[in-house]
Image 1 (cartoon, rainbow, N blue to C red):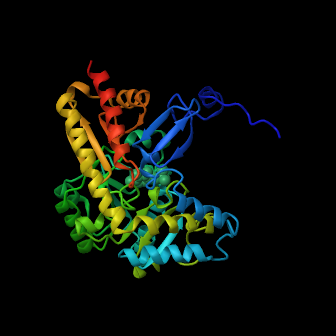
Image 2: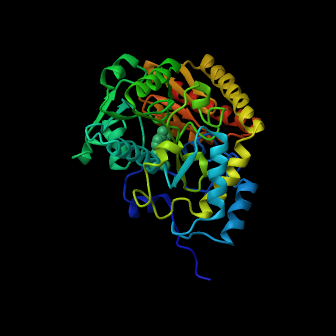
Image 3: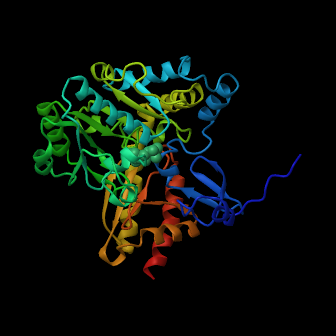
Length: 404
Ligand SMILES: *Cc1c(COP(=O)(O)O)cnc(C)c1O
């Protein structure tokens, strides 16, 4: 057999388009909430592949579903439907407000579908000026041109002009500002129940409630981007149920496939009619391999055992992080819900989130940032207590180093 090509971290710089700056080690294996690098060093994984690996690495049931489907049928194209996609659709429909599902391959694609649906719905109603989209500062909705434009972080869109027009941004959690721009020409409002990439900022219940009322008054589509908050991340299957505010369209991805690429847009019967045959689509969306994996993931996550476990783990993290913060006061606030936790750095440590996660890597734990001033934790929803303790002990050593 031919030897595999030898690769090191340097190979990344040699061969890859430099849109990322990955850590200076290469991970080769994972099991549960632990991963190992090429040198055999172990890390506790508090990042979960950016809120994706909700059941950790190499979960036996998910792996078995993948392997079983891999031996049967991978892909057909959308001229032929398949059993796993229909079963997954029914699982999502039975567990949410939705009546209909559109499958795609990523969060950005799910949001793209949602925004296109809203524009076309208004046009189908004969209202060609009802094309305005309201979104929020600091939001993140993906990296396609439409979704970076809807996102509220100009650093991701400013180099790609001309951008799709008709999108207005107002401050997150400022209902009065939103009310000023939402009118009868608004076709959609898109919002994250908890801004993830933007710094782990939860929406105020009154804000989402108010957006719901404004959308009702002006017949606009309320889109909840639950790509990061969905699939159990906050301790409920989707965060909208915690807020008691039901959107018209919900987008989900990330943890839906636990690492196998899949996204979905959920909506009502009435809105689904907008996207008739041939109006939208994607080659891989809803293929049997992805949906078989997601079906297994769904069956495990949508149980009281896993969802209640998220709330318990939230407390373990809070207790541990507060203890660290008592000894080394570097956080001004610890916020978020379930296992989407953000630690805001104090003025003294502003801009040091990346450096802290690099030191954490050296100590053997993987954490995320959410902007330069927030350390973010999005571990597996079933991370064992022992791994939480050990990971936080390692994280505490990193914090001690930044404070010394
Ligand atoms: C990650 C994320 C996206 C983009 O998902 P991709 O799969 O990277 O396209 C969109 N919205 C939110 C809230 C996200 O966290």
